Length: 491
Image (tube, rainbow, N blue to C red; front, side, top):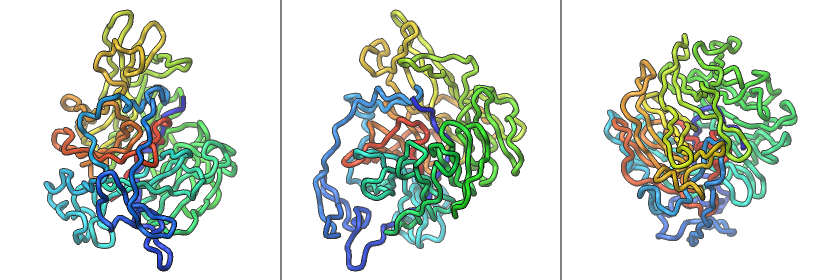
């Protein structure tokens, strides 16, 4: 099992891929002006660089319920049921159906004229003076690992690396003018850190450095926006940084993982095994966050409040999924300035069943940008003796109706960081929730497919119908936890 990932980053802008002289298209993104394809079909770019209709061929569902990333997540969407009716026909362009036009501003629909992103409805940003769909980046698989981008409301993903070249961990830069990703041997030190300009062009990616040159270790847990530098973890521990213009990588820390940038782009937090959460403020050397437990991990800033989100295991309790111990984590918030006593946002649970217990822990948390909501995954498991099995798998009938994973939203007091009210169930058998930069949409992974659904910002309840990106070509990966969390283009 791999560790869960790091840095809460949002993702930068993407527009139509430039075509060659006289070509109608170079990939399916260029065919979006053909409109919504008939049911069961999609627009693709053929070998003659013209747009044509092709039949969708869904990839068979996998039994991904056995894939556990250190116990933090399972893509349990293989449950024969549906996600509570949240799926929608793949051809739907639902970008304007979100709870969008209720705030002052935010009332210009997709394609309408704008002067700033605040003019546009939820899920849209102002690009070239028109409101256009935000993009989402994920890591997927089509027989090889691929860094992918897609409009959130128009199914059809584009690989950032060339055909046959593996890639992973796409991250947008500040302002959305570039996108970074790892390509080549993404599981070893030979992997390359590359960038492409946004809007995308047909030019090859620019390689900035390699894992070999930056400490002879795999590039993992990479983050960028809102940071002024690109940062990543060298293998399993230690953080390096590099300007987007390239140069020699700098070792920011000799240990630690799960780094995350503050809104100012300079301050950052990370966790160090056995020592808890560290914060660097104003360029100073990192120091322990006062009040954070030594088991703290995965810190996340939001864009507005002073509260830092993190997981911790104050009881130092672990359970065994197979042969590997998994910490039984809880979710907390704590002020970045001054520290104090952590506020518990989501606790573990336990109930007795015949011969054992059904229990849960918390994983994959993510802030709403304004700090008013937090999304997280509750992982439910059956514990018999010392052996733990995620609910929904064979032999876990004692779990009853408890799914292996469930995404919840929790209202948070933006001043105190304390939980307000009861958690809201958002989706079952789903994982890796990620708020849009306007806070009105949540992207997540269900059954290996990217899904996006609107929320009521007052109640946290899911609204409307989810937009499902079918697995016609790519299965969205989840096995590396937060490293595979969907990243949104910033507004």
